[in-house]
Length: 133
Image 1 (cartoon, rainbow, N blue to C red):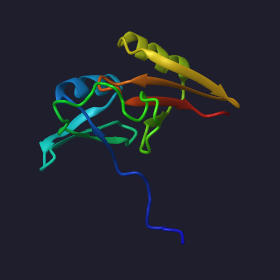
Image 2 (tube, one colour):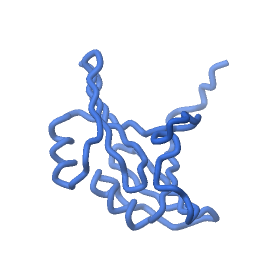
Image 3 (spheres, one colour):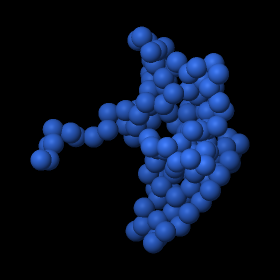
């Protein structure tokens, strides 16, 4: 059964250690702070002009390890491993990341598509994806 009522992803929930640190990083990627902290979790909201909305979940345990459980451990756990942001110009994005001191950790080319990865301050993985023509 197809659930036709689903129209798009509304937002991505991303647990972070520090609102200030996460906000500063994502603003370098063009996101704008919308609101927060709000709610019982609490959360803060940033949004990119293209419509991508991220909710920063601000309830990280103080003893949370710095490693990304889903990406950095030898045991491969289930769960969401990264977000992929589609881009139009690889060189322009790479130059902007470089200007902000954001390190590209890996790049892959596959059947004409190019995608490369960065880590946010909490070790969350962000993919920049240029589809094949």
